[in-house]
Amino acid sequence: MNKDVPNNNNSNDEVDLIRLLDYFKGGIKSIFRKLWQLIEVFFKFIVLIKKNWLIVLGITAVGAIYGWYLDNFSTSENLSYEMIVRSNPIGNIELYAFSSEVNNQKAINYKSEGIDMIKRLNVKTMSVTPLEREEDVINSYFDKIESAVMRNDMTDTLYYHSFEIDGHKGKMENTDYSLQAIKLKAPENTSPDILQKELLNYLNNLPGVEAEVQNKLSILKTYEKVLKQNLDNIDSVMASRASLNQNSGLAGAEQLLVNTASRGNVEADLLKYSEALSKKLYGTQKKITEYESGISVVSNLRHVSEKGVMDNKFIRYAILAFGLSLLIILLIEFNKYLNKYQKA
Image (cartoon, rainbow, N blue to C red; front, side):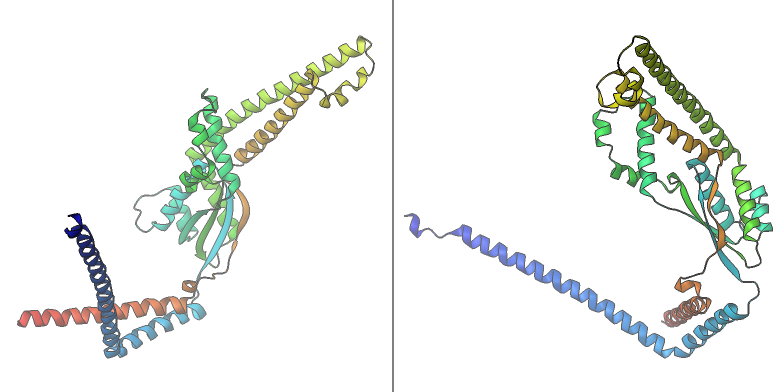
């Protein structure tokens, strides 16, 4: 009986498969149709440029000649200057904010020491970019861990197990990196030494930067004092044990401080602690030196050559003029369309 019953399931599967293939076929045709429409628009645009080639060529030539003139005969050329500084997050925030002030100086209607300085030195533009080093990522990562330890949080929790360096790097801001590259545009007769001196003097005397430096120095110097006291205590204990052993007449007592590193006793543990504390003291003193100098120079301000294509004024103004000619052609065509619409 079952052999005579038609297999409707297979028939339905075949119909669904055909529909699916037709669907993909229609989708592919639609994609190629859209691509061809874009190509047609592009060809129409090329034809439009060809019809108005005199306008395009004339305006582009004017822009190129103007850029060539600026490159060869302009006496008010602005040069590019670059320097690298070392700073802390608060100093970096002020640095980026000051850069924004420089680039918007024409729109700023208030007076300040910084605005007066950049106008006096004729600084035209300023940009700040971080030098992203792995050292800064690691330091920032462990600073987060250490700050949690100071709050008595345990570092063996699941949170810190999942707090990985790669993930932390993705959350870092530009201001979290200690080295920052500063690029300036200023007239060629600007003295780099004077510009660098006045810029750093202004930034280091800002209230936020100065307060951050003093706060960090206070904390670091207190920590330095504690480390030195612990090292002195270890030295005192070691000296006392050496003196005690010597007075008790133990053989080889005078070699106690030299040969105990390989033996599992109190002196060996103290030597290990002393080495660890010495490394912490070195790192702390290094940070103190960095904060005492505030925003400090790593590489002095100097003139740098412009290597970008758009930095060539001949090419830059030729491209800008070409874009302007295209805009004019489009406006002409739009005006023709409006005239036709008005007559309709």
